[in-house]
Image (cartoon, rainbow, N blue to C red; front, side, top):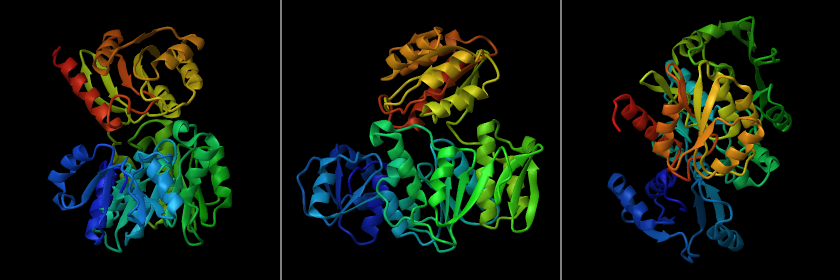
Length: 446
Protein backbone atom coordinates (compact mmCIF):
# COMPACT_ATOMS: atom_id res chain seq x y z
CA UNK A 1 0.00 0.00 0.00
CA UNK A 2 1.79 3.10 -1.29
CA UNK A 3 0.85 6.41 0.34
CA UNK A 4 -0.55 6.34 3.87
CA UNK A 5 -2.71 9.44 3.97
CA UNK A 6 -6.47 9.22 4.60
CA UNK A 7 -7.46 6.91 1.75
CA UNK A 8 -4.28 4.84 2.11
CA UNK A 9 -5.04 4.16 5.75
CA UNK A 10 -8.60 3.14 4.87
CA UNK A 11 -7.36 0.80 2.14
CA UNK A 12 -4.85 -0.74 4.57
CA UNK A 13 -7.58 -1.36 7.13
CA UNK A 14 -9.69 -3.05 4.47
CA UNK A 15 -6.75 -5.26 3.46
CA UNK A 16 -6.00 -6.28 7.05
CA UNK A 17 -9.63 -7.18 7.72
CA UNK A 18 -9.73 -9.22 4.51
CA UNK A 19 -6.79 -11.25 5.81
CA UNK A 20 -3.95 -9.74 3.79
CA UNK A 21 -0.52 -8.79 5.16
CA UNK A 22 0.18 -5.40 3.59
CA UNK A 23 3.47 -3.58 3.45
CA UNK A 24 2.58 0.02 4.27
CA UNK A 25 4.84 2.41 2.38
CA UNK A 26 5.03 6.17 2.92
CA UNK A 27 7.51 8.98 2.40
CA UNK A 28 7.53 9.47 6.19
CA UNK A 29 6.57 6.05 7.62
CA UNK A 30 7.18 6.90 11.28
CA UNK A 31 4.98 10.00 11.14
CA UNK A 32 2.28 8.17 9.17
CA UNK A 33 2.37 5.24 11.58
CA UNK A 34 2.04 7.54 14.57
CA UNK A 35 -0.91 9.37 13.02
CA UNK A 36 -2.70 6.16 12.05
CA UNK A 37 -1.82 4.14 15.14
CA UNK A 38 -4.07 5.85 17.68
CA UNK A 39 -7.20 5.59 15.56
CA UNK A 40 -6.47 2.26 13.88
CA UNK A 41 -4.52 -0.04 16.21
CA UNK A 42 -4.98 -2.97 13.80
CA UNK A 43 -2.34 -1.33 11.59
CA UNK A 44 0.27 -1.38 14.35
CA UNK A 45 1.13 -5.00 13.56
CA UNK A 46 1.63 -4.30 9.84
CA UNK A 47 5.08 -3.67 8.43
CA UNK A 48 5.73 0.02 7.73
CA UNK A 49 8.47 0.95 5.25
CA UNK A 50 9.81 4.00 3.44
CA UNK A 51 8.43 4.46 -0.04
CA UNK A 52 12.06 4.64 -1.16
CA UNK A 53 12.72 1.09 0.04
CA UNK A 54 13.92 -1.34 -2.63
CA UNK A 55 11.30 -4.04 -2.02
CA UNK A 56 10.06 -6.63 -4.48
CA UNK A 57 8.24 -9.06 -2.14
CA UNK A 58 4.69 -8.08 -3.08
CA UNK A 59 2.06 -9.30 -5.55
CA UNK A 60 -0.11 -6.16 -5.73
CA UNK A 61 0.77 -2.50 -5.56
CA UNK A 62 -2.16 -0.41 -4.32
CA UNK A 63 -1.92 3.36 -4.70
CA UNK A 64 -3.26 6.34 -2.82
CA UNK A 65 -4.58 9.01 -5.24
CA UNK A 66 -1.79 11.44 -4.38
CA UNK A 67 1.00 9.10 -5.54
CA UNK A 68 2.36 10.30 -8.91
CA UNK A 69 2.40 7.75 -11.75
CA UNK A 70 6.19 8.14 -12.13
CA UNK A 71 6.95 6.85 -8.62
CA UNK A 72 9.89 4.37 -8.70
CA UNK A 73 7.88 1.64 -6.95
CA UNK A 74 5.28 1.83 -9.70
CA UNK A 75 7.91 1.43 -12.39
CA UNK A 76 9.44 -1.49 -10.50
CA UNK A 77 6.07 -3.20 -10.00
CA UNK A 78 5.16 -2.75 -13.66
CA UNK A 79 8.48 -4.24 -14.79
CA UNK A 80 7.90 -7.30 -12.56
CA UNK A 81 4.31 -7.80 -13.72
CA UNK A 82 2.71 -7.06 -10.34
CA UNK A 83 -0.90 -5.88 -10.46
CA UNK A 84 -1.22 -2.12 -9.87
CA UNK A 85 -4.54 -0.68 -8.75
CA UNK A 86 -5.75 2.30 -6.73
CA UNK A 87 -7.71 2.58 -3.50
CA UNK A 88 -10.86 3.30 -5.54
CA UNK A 89 -10.50 0.05 -7.47
CA UNK A 90 -9.72 -1.95 -4.31
CA UNK A 91 -12.82 -0.62 -2.55
CA UNK A 92 -15.00 -1.28 -5.61
CA UNK A 93 -13.91 -4.93 -5.79
CA UNK A 94 -15.09 -5.51 -2.22
CA UNK A 95 -18.19 -3.30 -2.18
CA UNK A 96 -21.51 -5.16 -2.04
CA UNK A 97 -23.95 -2.30 -2.71
CA UNK A 98 -24.95 -0.01 -5.56
CA UNK A 99 -22.47 2.59 -6.77
CA UNK A 100 -23.01 6.12 -8.10
CA UNK A 101 -19.78 7.79 -9.32
CA UNK A 102 -19.54 11.56 -9.90
CA UNK A 103 -16.66 13.13 -11.80
CA UNK A 104 -15.97 16.43 -13.54
CA UNK A 105 -13.65 19.39 -13.10
CA UNK A 106 -16.07 21.39 -10.94
CA UNK A 107 -19.21 20.74 -8.94
CA UNK A 108 -18.36 17.19 -7.84
CA UNK A 109 -18.64 17.79 -4.11
CA UNK A 110 -21.90 19.73 -4.23
CA UNK A 111 -23.51 17.30 -6.67
CA UNK A 112 -22.36 14.20 -4.78
CA UNK A 113 -23.59 15.59 -1.48
CA UNK A 114 -26.93 16.65 -2.98
CA UNK A 115 -27.47 13.19 -4.52
CA UNK A 116 -26.64 11.62 -1.17
CA UNK A 117 -29.23 13.82 0.56
CA UNK A 118 -31.91 12.94 -2.00
CA UNK A 119 -31.27 9.22 -1.55
CA UNK A 120 -31.31 9.50 2.26
CA UNK A 121 -34.57 11.45 2.12
CA UNK A 122 -35.98 8.62 -0.01
CA UNK A 123 -35.23 6.20 2.83
CA UNK A 124 -32.11 4.59 1.38
CA UNK A 125 -28.95 3.98 3.36
CA UNK A 126 -26.65 6.13 1.24
CA UNK A 127 -23.17 7.39 2.04
CA UNK A 128 -21.10 10.02 0.25
CA UNK A 129 -17.52 8.76 -0.10
CA UNK A 130 -14.33 9.29 -2.08
CA UNK A 131 -12.87 12.79 -2.38
CA UNK A 132 -15.58 14.03 0.00
CA UNK A 133 -16.73 12.31 3.17
CA UNK A 134 -15.11 9.02 4.16
CA UNK A 135 -12.79 7.03 1.88
CA UNK A 136 -14.64 4.46 -0.22
CA UNK A 137 -12.65 1.65 1.45
CA UNK A 138 -14.15 2.48 4.85
CA UNK A 139 -17.70 2.05 3.54
CA UNK A 140 -16.74 -1.12 1.66
CA UNK A 141 -15.92 -2.69 5.03
CA UNK A 142 -19.50 -2.52 6.30
CA UNK A 143 -21.86 -1.96 3.35
CA UNK A 144 -24.76 -4.30 2.65
CA UNK A 145 -26.20 -5.14 -0.80
CA UNK A 146 -29.06 -2.63 -0.40
CA UNK A 147 -26.70 0.26 0.45
CA UNK A 148 -25.68 2.99 -2.00
CA UNK A 149 -22.27 4.66 -2.23
CA UNK A 150 -22.19 8.08 -3.89
CA UNK A 151 -18.52 8.42 -4.76
CA UNK A 152 -16.81 11.65 -5.78
CA UNK A 153 -14.13 10.54 -8.22
CA UNK A 154 -11.06 12.51 -9.31
CA UNK A 155 -8.84 12.10 -12.36
CA UNK A 156 -6.07 10.97 -9.99
CA UNK A 157 -8.24 8.05 -8.83
CA UNK A 158 -9.27 7.15 -12.37
CA UNK A 159 -5.61 6.68 -13.36
CA UNK A 160 -5.57 3.36 -11.49
CA UNK A 161 -8.96 1.70 -12.11
CA UNK A 162 -9.58 -1.47 -14.09
CA UNK A 163 -12.85 -3.28 -13.32
CA UNK A 164 -14.49 -0.18 -11.77
CA UNK A 165 -18.13 -0.08 -12.96
CA UNK A 166 -20.68 2.23 -11.33
CA UNK A 167 -24.33 1.53 -12.08
CA UNK A 168 -24.79 5.30 -12.44
CA UNK A 169 -21.92 7.55 -13.61
CA UNK A 170 -22.00 11.34 -13.95
CA UNK A 171 -19.71 13.64 -15.96
CA UNK A 172 -20.48 17.21 -14.91
CA UNK A 173 -17.97 19.17 -17.02
CA UNK A 174 -14.41 18.90 -18.30
CA UNK A 175 -12.16 21.98 -18.30
CA UNK A 176 -8.40 22.45 -17.96
CA UNK A 177 -6.98 21.17 -14.65
CA UNK A 178 -4.13 19.07 -13.20
CA UNK A 179 -1.90 19.47 -16.24
CA UNK A 180 1.13 19.25 -13.93
CA UNK A 181 0.17 15.63 -13.28
CA UNK A 182 -1.42 14.48 -16.54
CA UNK A 183 0.70 16.37 -19.06
CA UNK A 184 -2.06 17.42 -21.46
CA UNK A 185 -5.74 18.28 -21.54
CA UNK A 186 -6.38 15.34 -23.88
CA UNK A 187 -4.98 12.92 -21.30
CA UNK A 188 -7.01 14.56 -18.53
CA UNK A 189 -10.23 14.21 -20.56
CA UNK A 190 -9.37 10.61 -21.40
CA UNK A 191 -9.07 9.83 -17.69
CA UNK A 192 -12.46 11.40 -16.96
CA UNK A 193 -14.01 9.02 -19.53
CA UNK A 194 -12.82 6.04 -17.50
CA UNK A 195 -15.69 6.64 -15.08
CA UNK A 196 -18.02 4.95 -17.59
CA UNK A 197 -15.56 2.81 -19.59
CA UNK A 198 -16.74 -0.46 -17.98
CA UNK A 199 -20.44 0.35 -17.99
CA UNK A 200 -22.84 -1.82 -20.00
CA UNK A 201 -26.45 -1.71 -21.16
CA UNK A 202 -28.62 -1.37 -18.08
CA UNK A 203 -26.25 1.16 -16.49
CA UNK A 204 -26.84 4.93 -16.69
CA UNK A 205 -24.48 7.72 -17.76
CA UNK A 206 -25.56 11.24 -16.76
CA UNK A 207 -23.81 13.86 -18.91
CA UNK A 208 -23.85 17.66 -19.18
CA UNK A 209 -25.14 18.37 -22.69
CA UNK A 210 -24.04 22.02 -22.40
CA UNK A 211 -20.38 20.98 -22.01
CA UNK A 212 -18.90 20.08 -25.42
CA UNK A 213 -16.07 17.95 -24.04
CA UNK A 214 -18.30 15.96 -21.69
CA UNK A 215 -20.84 15.49 -24.48
CA UNK A 216 -18.20 14.21 -26.92
CA UNK A 217 -16.72 11.81 -24.36
CA UNK A 218 -20.14 10.24 -23.81
CA UNK A 219 -20.65 9.44 -27.49
CA UNK A 220 -18.87 6.10 -27.15
CA UNK A 221 -20.71 4.94 -24.05
CA UNK A 222 -22.47 1.56 -23.88
CA UNK A 223 -24.64 2.67 -20.97
CA UNK A 224 -27.89 4.56 -21.48
CA UNK A 225 -27.02 8.25 -21.91
CA UNK A 226 -29.18 10.63 -19.86
CA UNK A 227 -28.64 14.36 -20.27
CA UNK A 228 -29.00 17.53 -18.28
CA UNK A 229 -29.02 21.05 -19.69
CA UNK A 230 -29.75 24.66 -18.75
CA UNK A 231 -30.51 25.44 -22.42
CA UNK A 232 -32.75 22.80 -23.96
CA UNK A 233 -34.77 19.67 -23.20
CA UNK A 234 -32.85 16.39 -23.67
CA UNK A 235 -34.53 13.25 -25.04
CA UNK A 236 -34.27 11.93 -21.49
CA UNK A 237 -33.02 13.74 -18.41
CA UNK A 238 -33.33 17.08 -16.59
CA UNK A 239 -33.46 20.62 -17.90
CA UNK A 240 -34.46 24.17 -16.96
CA UNK A 241 -37.16 26.07 -18.86
CA UNK A 242 -39.70 28.73 -18.01
CA UNK A 243 -38.26 29.23 -14.54
CA UNK A 244 -38.73 25.55 -13.64
CA UNK A 245 -36.60 22.42 -13.31
CA UNK A 246 -38.19 19.69 -15.40
CA UNK A 247 -37.52 16.01 -16.07
CA UNK A 248 -38.19 13.97 -19.21
CA UNK A 249 -38.58 10.26 -18.58
CA UNK A 250 -40.67 7.22 -19.46
CA UNK A 251 -43.65 8.85 -17.73
CA UNK A 252 -43.37 12.04 -19.82
CA UNK A 253 -42.19 15.60 -19.20
CA UNK A 254 -42.98 16.88 -15.71
CA UNK A 255 -42.02 19.81 -13.49
CA UNK A 256 -39.93 19.06 -10.41
CA UNK A 257 -39.81 22.52 -8.81
CA UNK A 258 -39.24 26.19 -9.59
CA UNK A 259 -35.63 27.26 -10.15
CA UNK A 260 -36.19 29.96 -7.50
CA UNK A 261 -36.95 27.25 -4.93
CA UNK A 262 -33.47 25.71 -5.22
CA UNK A 263 -31.71 26.70 -1.99
CA UNK A 264 -28.15 26.80 -3.34
CA UNK A 265 -27.58 29.95 -5.45
CA UNK A 266 -25.91 30.53 -8.80
CA UNK A 267 -26.02 29.22 -12.36
CA UNK A 268 -23.32 26.64 -11.58
CA UNK A 269 -25.44 25.24 -8.76
CA UNK A 270 -28.43 25.04 -11.09
CA UNK A 271 -26.30 22.73 -13.24
CA UNK A 272 -25.39 20.70 -10.16
CA UNK A 273 -29.07 20.46 -9.22
CA UNK A 274 -30.03 19.33 -12.73
CA UNK A 275 -27.36 16.61 -12.62
CA UNK A 276 -28.69 15.41 -9.26
CA UNK A 277 -32.28 15.40 -10.55
CA UNK A 278 -31.30 13.34 -13.60
CA UNK A 279 -29.42 10.88 -11.41
CA UNK A 280 -32.14 10.52 -8.78
CA UNK A 281 -34.87 10.08 -11.39
CA UNK A 282 -32.80 7.39 -13.14
CA UNK A 283 -32.65 5.58 -9.79
CA UNK A 284 -36.42 5.72 -9.39
CA UNK A 285 -36.62 8.38 -6.66
CA UNK A 286 -40.11 9.99 -6.57
CA UNK A 287 -40.34 13.67 -7.67
CA UNK A 288 -41.71 14.88 -4.27
CA UNK A 289 -38.56 13.62 -2.53
CA UNK A 290 -36.34 15.32 -5.11
CA UNK A 291 -38.32 18.56 -4.81
CA UNK A 292 -38.11 18.59 -0.99
CA UNK A 293 -34.34 18.07 -1.04
CA UNK A 294 -33.69 20.81 -3.60
CA UNK A 295 -35.70 23.23 -1.45
CA UNK A 296 -33.85 22.38 1.77
CA UNK A 297 -30.25 21.53 0.77
CA UNK A 298 -27.91 24.29 1.98
CA UNK A 299 -24.71 23.42 0.14
CA UNK A 300 -21.34 22.16 1.36
CA UNK A 301 -18.46 23.47 3.40
CA UNK A 302 -15.62 25.32 1.61
CA UNK A 303 -17.80 26.09 -1.44
CA UNK A 304 -18.96 29.75 -1.38
CA UNK A 305 -19.52 29.25 2.34
CA UNK A 306 -20.32 32.35 4.38
CA UNK A 307 -18.07 32.25 7.47
CA UNK A 308 -18.60 35.44 9.46
CA UNK A 309 -19.17 39.17 9.08
CA UNK A 310 -15.95 40.76 10.30
CA UNK A 311 -16.35 44.48 11.04
CA UNK A 312 -18.85 44.96 8.23
CA UNK A 313 -17.07 42.68 5.72
CA UNK A 314 -18.50 39.30 4.71
CA UNK A 315 -15.81 36.58 4.79
CA UNK A 316 -16.55 33.86 2.19
CA UNK A 317 -14.73 30.53 2.10
CA UNK A 318 -14.44 29.02 -1.39
CA UNK A 319 -11.29 27.02 -0.69
CA UNK A 320 -12.76 24.29 -2.91
CA UNK A 321 -12.03 26.67 -5.80
CA UNK A 322 -8.85 24.82 -6.79
CA UNK A 323 -8.84 25.60 -10.52
CA UNK A 324 -9.39 28.62 -12.74
CA UNK A 325 -12.85 27.64 -13.97
CA UNK A 326 -14.15 27.07 -10.45
CA UNK A 327 -12.87 30.48 -9.33
CA UNK A 328 -14.37 32.14 -12.40
CA UNK A 329 -17.76 30.76 -11.31
CA UNK A 330 -17.22 32.10 -7.78
CA UNK A 331 -16.27 35.54 -9.14
CA UNK A 332 -19.46 35.61 -11.23
CA UNK A 333 -21.51 34.83 -8.11
CA UNK A 334 -20.33 37.94 -6.22
CA UNK A 335 -22.98 40.65 -5.92
CA UNK A 336 -21.11 43.26 -3.86
CA UNK A 337 -17.60 44.82 -3.85
CA UNK A 338 -15.12 41.97 -3.36
CA UNK A 339 -11.44 41.44 -2.62
CA UNK A 340 -10.26 38.01 -3.74
CA UNK A 341 -7.41 35.82 -2.45
CA UNK A 342 -5.61 34.10 -5.34
CA UNK A 343 -2.71 31.64 -5.58
CA UNK A 344 -1.28 28.44 -4.24
CA UNK A 345 0.28 25.25 -5.58
CA UNK A 346 1.31 25.40 -9.24
CA UNK A 347 -0.63 22.89 -11.41
CA UNK A 348 0.88 24.32 -14.64
CA UNK A 349 -2.34 25.83 -15.95
CA UNK A 350 -3.00 29.17 -17.64
CA UNK A 351 -4.90 31.85 -15.66
CA UNK A 352 -5.30 34.35 -18.52
CA UNK A 353 -9.04 33.79 -19.01
CA UNK A 354 -9.66 34.02 -15.26
CA UNK A 355 -7.61 37.20 -14.96
CA UNK A 356 -9.52 38.74 -17.87
CA UNK A 357 -12.82 37.81 -16.15
CA UNK A 358 -11.61 39.45 -12.93
CA UNK A 359 -10.52 42.60 -14.81
CA UNK A 360 -13.87 42.78 -16.61
CA UNK A 361 -15.96 42.38 -13.45
CA UNK A 362 -16.46 45.76 -11.69
CA UNK A 363 -17.44 43.97 -8.48
CA UNK A 364 -13.86 42.69 -7.98
CA UNK A 365 -12.10 45.67 -6.44
CA UNK A 366 -8.85 44.07 -5.33
CA UNK A 367 -6.79 40.90 -5.07
CA UNK A 368 -4.18 39.53 -2.69
CA UNK A 369 -1.70 37.08 -4.22
CA UNK A 370 -0.13 34.18 -2.33
CA UNK A 371 1.84 30.99 -2.82
CA UNK A 372 3.75 29.43 -5.68
CA UNK A 373 1.50 30.97 -8.36
CA UNK A 374 1.72 34.56 -7.10
CA UNK A 375 4.22 35.56 -9.82
CA UNK A 376 2.02 34.13 -12.58
CA UNK A 377 -1.07 35.88 -11.23
CA UNK A 378 0.78 39.18 -10.92
CA UNK A 379 1.93 38.97 -14.54
CA UNK A 380 -1.39 37.84 -16.02
CA UNK A 381 -3.54 40.24 -13.99
CA UNK A 382 -1.32 43.11 -15.19
CA UNK A 383 -1.61 41.88 -18.79
CA UNK A 384 -5.41 41.94 -18.36
CA UNK A 385 -5.26 45.52 -17.09
CA UNK A 386 -6.05 44.74 -13.44
CA UNK A 387 -3.51 46.44 -11.16
CA UNK A 388 -5.38 46.53 -7.82
CA UNK A 389 -3.42 43.66 -6.31
CA UNK A 390 -1.00 43.18 -3.46
CA UNK A 391 1.24 40.30 -2.45
CA UNK A 392 1.45 38.71 0.97
CA UNK A 393 4.26 36.63 2.48
CA UNK A 394 2.02 34.10 4.21
CA UNK A 395 -1.60 33.02 4.48
CA UNK A 396 -2.60 34.86 7.64
CA UNK A 397 -1.15 38.17 6.48
CA UNK A 398 -2.96 37.65 3.15
CA UNK A 399 -6.35 37.24 4.84
CA UNK A 400 -5.76 40.29 7.02
CA UNK A 401 -4.51 42.34 4.05
CA UNK A 402 -7.62 41.41 2.04
CA UNK A 403 -9.87 42.40 4.95
CA UNK A 404 -8.08 45.73 5.20
CA UNK A 405 -8.60 46.37 1.47
CA UNK A 406 -12.32 45.51 1.54
CA UNK A 407 -14.93 48.21 1.97
CA UNK A 408 -17.67 48.08 4.58
CA UNK A 409 -20.54 46.05 3.17
CA UNK A 410 -18.18 44.19 0.83
CA UNK A 411 -16.72 40.68 0.65
CA UNK A 412 -13.42 38.94 1.12
CA UNK A 413 -13.49 35.85 -1.09
CA UNK A 414 -11.02 32.98 -0.65
CA UNK A 415 -11.20 31.29 -4.06
CA UNK A 416 -7.55 30.70 -4.94
CA UNK A 417 -7.88 28.87 -8.31
CA UNK A 418 -5.04 26.65 -7.09
CA UNK A 419 -4.50 23.57 -4.98
CA UNK A 420 -3.27 24.09 -1.45
CA UNK A 421 -0.26 21.77 -1.28
CA UNK A 422 2.38 24.50 -1.13
CA UNK A 423 0.97 25.64 2.25
CA UNK A 424 -1.58 23.11 3.54
CA UNK A 425 -2.41 19.41 3.60
CA UNK A 426 -5.56 19.97 1.53
CA UNK A 427 -8.21 22.55 0.63
CA UNK A 428 -10.21 21.69 3.77
CA UNK A 429 -7.29 22.65 6.02
CA UNK A 430 -6.85 25.88 4.03
CA UNK A 431 -10.56 26.70 4.39
CA UNK A 432 -10.53 25.95 8.11
CA UNK A 433 -7.53 28.25 8.60
CA UNK A 434 -9.29 31.01 6.64
CA UNK A 435 -12.34 30.63 8.89
CA UNK A 436 -10.16 30.71 12.03
CA UNK A 437 -8.42 33.93 10.95
CA UNK A 438 -11.72 35.51 9.84
CA UNK A 439 -13.27 34.86 13.25
CA UNK A 440 -10.23 36.32 14.99
CA UNK A 441 -10.58 39.48 12.87
CA UNK A 442 -14.30 39.64 13.72
CA UNK A 443 -13.43 39.33 17.40
CA UNK A 444 -10.79 42.05 17.22
CA UNK A 445 -7.94 39.62 17.93
CA UNK A 446 -4.57 40.55 16.43
